[in-house]
Amino acid sequence: MWFLIHPFAGFWRRQGPRITYLVVVAVALVIGVALFQLREPILRVEFGFSWPLTVMAVFCYAGGVLLEHYYRRQITIGVLFGLPEVSEKRSGRLLTEGIYGRIRHPRYLGLVFEISGFALLVNYLAVYVIAIAMVPVVLLIVLLEERELLARFGDDYAQYMRSVPRFFPKLDR
View 1 (cartoon, rainbow, N blue to C red):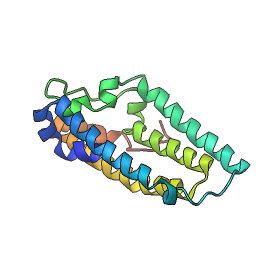
View 2 (view 1 turned 60 degrees about the horizontal axis):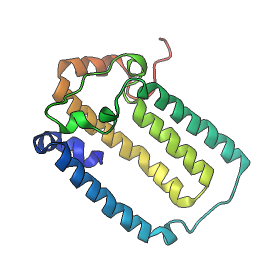
View 3 (view 1 turned 180 degrees about the vertical axis):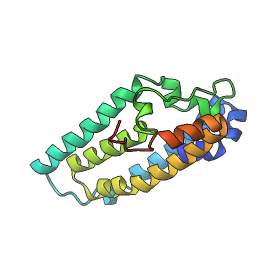
View 4 (view 1 turned 60 degrees about the vertical axis):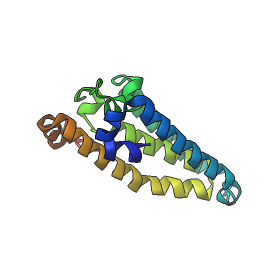
């Protein structure tokens, strides 16, 4: 979804949320149907149950849920689904307090933790491949989002970028 929205936020803003989400959901459905058709070969390699991996999975997933708890206290469902990116009427506001005062992208960091926990729990080769591939994908999405936020918030976001780390909080705070 974000690869369709962030690089073209100006275009989608002119189209409005309804058209944007109609297109994005249609693309997601096509991808989902294609993956469903390929499920047999994709999920062929399973490694079985493992207690040590299950324990690590619980910790990873709990880290993601904890981050989600903190960022969800600060953002609305509209922001979560990207309305400020696709609506001329809802430009949003720059979040710099709470968890966003410690790290710039708690949503994406939480997602990485949760997907990693899921991969460790289900223990399928395909899910490990997805989890590993997700790291550069998330980084690219973050870079696209930061470019869009710089365009939207200007110097305020540039200052925020200089003072708040992208993913890992400074330990001296």
